[in-house]
Image (tube, rainbow, N blue to C red; front, top):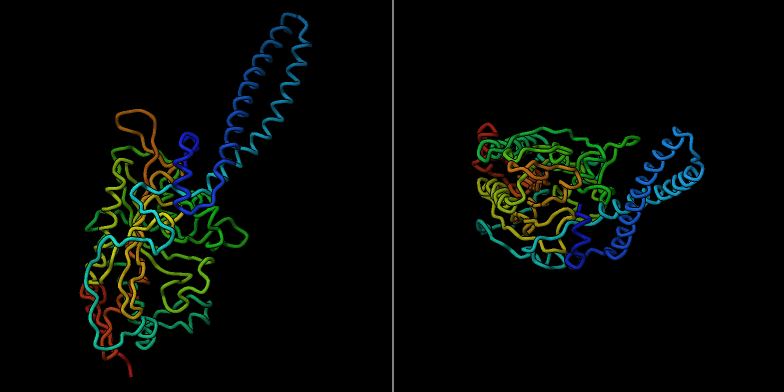
Length: 426
């Protein structure tokens, strides 16, 4: 959430930033509404102060057996006026809050201006896509042939955009989760957490998923609980409403969770395979940092996510999202895109973002400076480290062999009881 004072003091900067994002936001309407709110608040506070003064004076006159009728008439009129103004004030407060909750974060000055993913510049690439002497299969075809992926039975159990994994595929999914968590907790000093997979409305509001993206969530019927769309939500809310000591920053958490998304805005996209599912597994990285260090921390987090792909020897590239392609809450985002030879394309496997104080302001997460002074909002960051299903996709497409078998990456073999190859059956 943006700071209303900052918007009021820098309206043209905010207007330009929102234009660069492609956000259709009526800033002038907000400024008018917020100005009326502040004026009304001042009037109500002045009226209440006068009411308290008049009440004390009435009591004093009555004790002295003096006539207080005129003052009591004034007090009655004043109370009615305050009651009327209080109603309007609450209405304006709610409207100001609703407006702020639906406005995206402002892009950092280093974010390239652009309208869509076509304007995202490539920052760097790692690894060379292999040269193939056969036509590589897409992951769903190979996984089905090797009898590890079953989309038909998953559709029978639940519906479209779900997968049933069996045998080697189920083990591969589990191996990747353990491999990723081990790397992040042992090599990069993240604290592993296992959070609830169901969250309340306040948690989703704190991370920016509500109210704007309600249609993308699975809400539990007759409750105000939701299935999590990503571990970012419960992990970020670990410290909601807290004041941290400055010397504990940065805090770094790694969490495995299943994720649930209705994908309401993605109809018709990636309907085959594991790329865009309603349920998928992910290892998420979340960091709480000092504002002065958050962009260094973003580069660090990005490197941690990249390490997983390097250890798995999967070619990838890093892109910087332009202003028009960033997520709602982000101030800056890097996407990591892994090479998929079956699709002959790079596809996203991780997004690493700095939200600055946007989420912390919504969730009221602050820290107390060691040197004293007022409490400040932390900066929050998160990134996939990695999306597990999409990593399975990348392994299937990059490690497939001409004879229809699948080689297991060397880094994963200790997590798969030494399995080296998945051979076709029959």
